[in-house]
Image 1 (cartoon, rainbow, N blue to C red):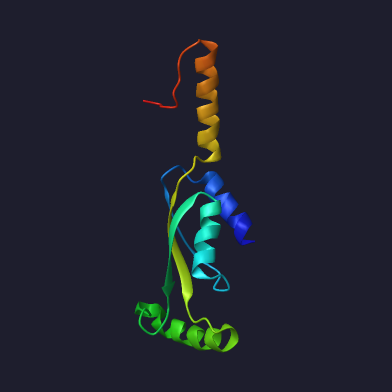
Image 2 (tube, one colour):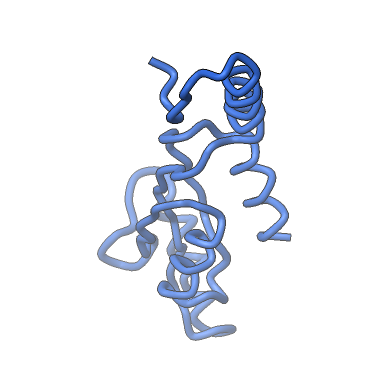
Length: 115
């Protein structure tokens, strides 16, 4: 389910756009970074929700979740990520392909720049 969701997001997200989200806590931090990289996301994963990082209106909710997660999985954190999309979306790939084809038709050198 996570892979399908990431695939859908990155297919529609434009190059250099930002994607923020939460990954399942069953993944280790490095495993989450690797998974995000598979989909062209340059990411950092942050553990949020421990005693030190709980904040604002979620602090009480996080403390309840913290107790539940600690007892069931031994992991008390939420894993949030911030990513930058490092590949073209499907729409951008289509535009690039049509520009490349049009340039080839008129025998023009197209080096991949739209400027």
